Amino acid sequence: MTSVDRLQDIEAIIARAARDCGRDPAGVTLVCVAKTFPAADVIPLLEAGHRVFGENRVQEARAKWGPLRAVYPGVELHLIGPLQSNKAREAVATFDVIETVDRPKIAQALAAEMASLDKRPRLLAQVNTGAEPQKAGVAPRDADAFIALCRERYGLNIAGLMCVPPAHQQASPHFALLADIAARNGLSELSMGMSSDYELAIQQGATCVRIGSAIMGERDYSTR
View 1 (spheres, helix red, strand yellow):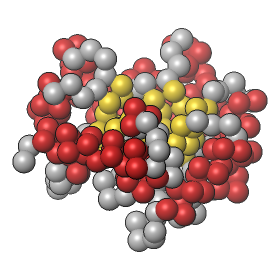
View 2 (view 1 turned 180 degrees about the vertical axis):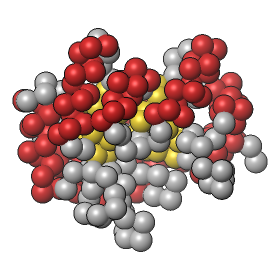
View 3 (view 1 turned 90 degrees about the horizontal axis):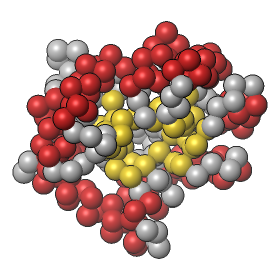
């Protein structure tokens, strides 16, 4: 089975999952996570018409997607990996959506670079719903204050929230927590759900699901 076959299968599952809980399938965006995969592996999906992709690293994305975007217009590129403040300018220049806004230093850097470049990617705040010390994201108890800080001090329009639940826990409570935080802050976008749990995420209101290995295949990290 090719990556295009897998993409089409997942699109059908997403549509069915949305309809099963009374949602319009058009309200769920499939972000194909292409991190670590070369451009040659992405081209078949682009040729098939898919245009929304996620990357973890700013420099990898710039190198890969600059040439691809020249050939395939309409790509929407999401940054889904941690962002360092010294990469904020490149991130703003490269990405259409930055899903990993998680601390004041990043918010400040993004605000400055967005003003400098006159480019405003959509921003999502990342919430560390499992309070995992090794994982990026604002703590759930601090999320309301952080969203307010982004809006009021830095003038950032936070469009929604993103989370990555702990690998060995049931994902549904984490998705519900994220949805609750979004609702009380008036946020409409929820980026949650990956290859193993995206149907659950759709049931809990996900507007973006980030799917990599189920489309692209297993990654080879040996050269990273």
